[in-house]
Image 1: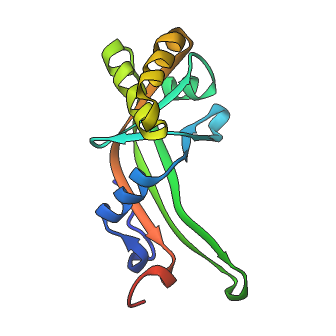
Image 2: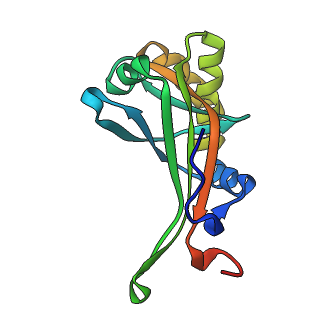
Length: 161
């Protein structure tokens, strides 16, 4: 169903790709936008048990697009080092494909938001809980169920290449 990587020697293992995903601070969510144009937007996220979680506004382009087509991709760049004298970039990145849904169950939504607080503000769990309660009516949470993950690195970062 998903295409094999053209430069298979540069493909990371699923475990390596998952490490990049877990360690990343932001990524780009791509959805099928209006008039057949893709729409990609940078987002903060949290990973847990094969799923990604995002907080989003109560309405907007992303939500409209996901309502029409729940198939999405999400890209995280784990390393991006330009090497000018070699005319290249030493990179490590991961792309996941899956289906996104708006979390409607309050317990699921609260769990997603707690995961985001835990990732980005671990020393402020109590304040994070207060912020979730204070802003509860202002936003939604999205869940992306990962169906496929692929990671790639510059050949310079692959031992033996």
